[in-house]
Length: 532
Image (cartoon, rainbow, N blue to C red; front, side, top):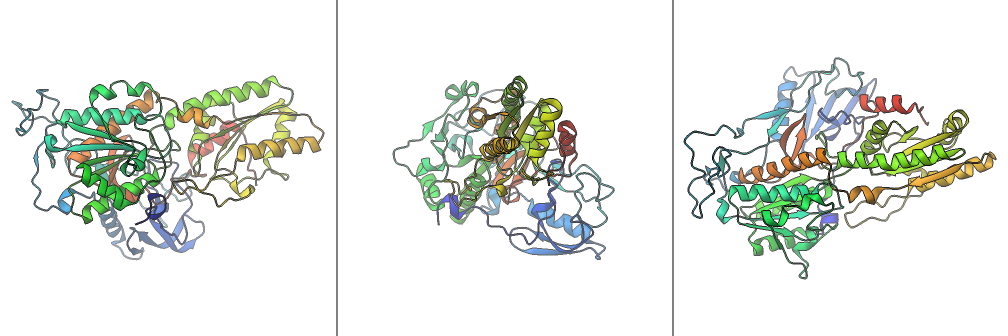
């Protein structure tokens, strides 16, 4: 098996993707699961679909009066959570050691949980579900509409609620748990690490380790695992970065699982984005293949907020808040100069959520450019022409652009990083250069300032909002592992915390819907036209 950066990234092909309708992230993202067989009128109306479950295509015949029930059954099957008992059918659950009614410490000899005179009603039932889609669109032309059939029929889609279970499948005193952080830095990594450790100790786990520098730590003999305890992690959330360090890429899945066997790891908590989760899912599958009783649980880490089906991911709120500093600096520079223009490049390889929300929050942005909405710089409807209009009418302008925006305007590169991501050209520098040339040809003096706060934002500690999100995600990751689930990730959907099978959230990045109400709100705030 090849390395993580190449072998385990999902290779899902789609004949035709539906128009992206994911910015209203409380709804179900139809793009991921469907290919169009035939269409009518617009991309949102069609007569039949192929449902993609990663293994086969199941055609939906809308002439079948039972199509809705069949779709819901298929959805339930896809979102069924992998469990230890799928492999170990004779695994016997034991009473949970997690109970907040009485805080008597777990004894050295496992005694069936915390003693209590009354039953504690803080557990989550395995049949509890969270509704993914909450808006019943009356028309496929409604802003942000997400339709499955031509009539935009309401179809319920339920996913599993996260939280502690009354029965667990691991004896805490026998568990060795490991935590690994992969990819790039993101505000909140230390917060998640801290809560995983604290919650593991509440269950009664004594052996907790951190794997240094991502998946690389499983194979590099110079890197030794880091013992973790509440004392070690008590104050790490007060700093940015990751206590364990991060890296991209890594060894093969076989090498990772071999290392896990040698170390005696029973639970692996993986913090990372789509590529990292693809690795976690491959580790889960290999553990099943080898019949290892190991729980592999992911915690989505992407500052870009581009994980499917989730309201938001940790680090996003902090990124939007910290971006205000850069935007305000660009605004002051632009408005203090004669014909000043401030350009701020923010994170967002495939999705423009940070740029959009930062523009909305600041109220200082005149032009917001994102990957999901094509734009031209030159021409009668181009960005530069609009900047000229802003210079003439208000004397200055502020532009916010996501790093993945306008890549079609730049020379493409075949270079990739260690995670297999294409190395993007710098759209911010390009816009700055083209703007200077444009106004020079017009003999109009401009003062263009360019700010790229990427690494300053990534290195920040989490703000209060992200701190809460990280806390709950870390706790629920541990609850999921002890409940016997593996190959899952934890997230927030419609303000509730849920467990999702990893394959259902990693097929491609979640994209902002240009027809969503939030993007319309951003356009109302900036007052920008279409740049096509």
